[in-house]
Length: 324
Image (cartoon, rainbow, N blue to C red):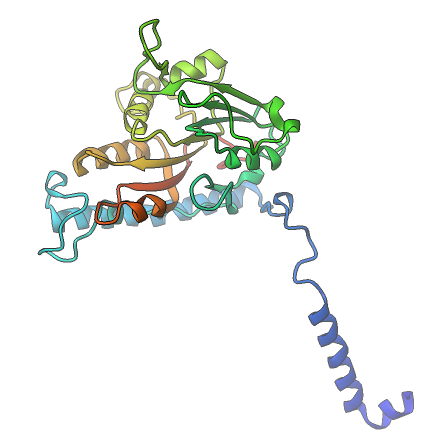
């Protein structure tokens, strides 16, 4: 056989090619497990900061384009309609066209929880996998906890505080072994406290709940509360805006990542734009969005008033923008 290959070296080349091809075809495409632990992106602090800076440059250009679009079709925010009729001036851009999720998450992005309604797109959950004192808040449970179950399954120390006055517990998706890391309360989230003896449903501000729980930072905040999100975050963000008490102290907005469903029923473009710009001011940057097509399917003929957004906070120090 050796003599044959010496007399005909092209046979050796052909045999080597066949062996390599066979190995490639029969081998798995990725021998590492698909589990979340294998998805973490190993990068040094310098690389992470470079990615964030580059993503912010891109996002700044998007904000400039937004202002140009408003000037073209407004020319001021009060003249913009969220969902205009199909008449001149064309094209009839919607609210969501002005608010693209144009920030590039510097980590892996993965949907956690059920497909359709319930799951959320998260940036860099691996950053929380080993984190001690990991705090998650979830508002709006509705007996569907596939998202919360996924977070618990893919982190070692995270605990979840869940709130929903319309149900009595988390959903059945959370296994018994992880329930010790969950804390449920039948409270609602609002822009002001209202939980006296005469209040049918106890409502708390986010600041009040954090104070009650002894928390100064939330690693991941999920909000799905049927339009209460606007008053809630308007109140929570206000101290961190210019002129606010937290801003004067130099305090960073205490949320690392926000996953939220927006319900824009009855809100003007002018109001929504200002609310959005306040989120941007405190450091929140949208990296993912998707319309609620379940709602749109049974609301045919109506406006696309619901959309999911995910944000990370680029300011201050948190698990997504620094190596803790």
